[in-house]
Image 1 (cartoon, rainbow, N blue to C red):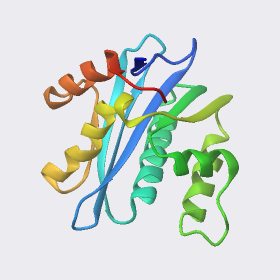
Image 2 (image 1 turned 30 degrees about the vertical axis):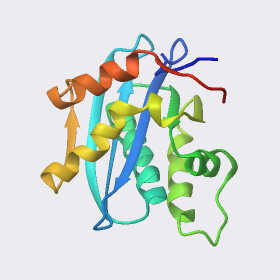
Image 3 (image 1 turned 180 degrees about the vertical axis):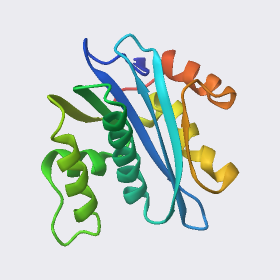
Image 4 (image 1 turned 60 degrees about the vertical axis):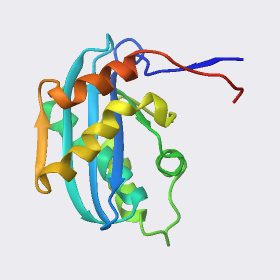
Amino acid sequence: MRHTISWSHPPHGFLKLNSDGAVAESRIATCGGVIHYENGVFVFGYSGIIGICSILQAELWAIYHGLRLIKEKGIGLYLLIESDSEVTVKFLNEGCPREHSCYSLVNVIVKMAGGFRDLSCVHILREANKVVDSFAKYEFSIAEGFSIFLGIPSWAKFPLLADMSAVQFPYNF
């Protein structure tokens, strides 16, 4: 049996934030994200270097920065967040244990999320999140700062097309 895995449009009236974190062998972490309108149109993307942290923290920082930018631009009250990190999604939906190193960051994100009328955070497979992976890893190539992209950068065009097209897998899930 073949299953199709691909990026999908957000529900009517929603923005979609796809986010990702990456950690190099040096333990330096980066994050990135892409925001789309309901019709799939690219709104903006971002990429930033975080410093030394875990992959879970990088995934959470990616969502934090996406929420921060959306709020700063005042562009949405309805938001769907997609992450390929199951633990990140679980922490944001169900809470994080107080003794966990991500507890404070999760709470900051949850408080930021309170300003949206409707917000959902869901897990997606990595195969449907390729463009965001390229945004997260972009900062490794420049090694400092935080970048916001109002247009699709040339290095992200192929991954964006890969996300938008169906990927078929010949096995059951």
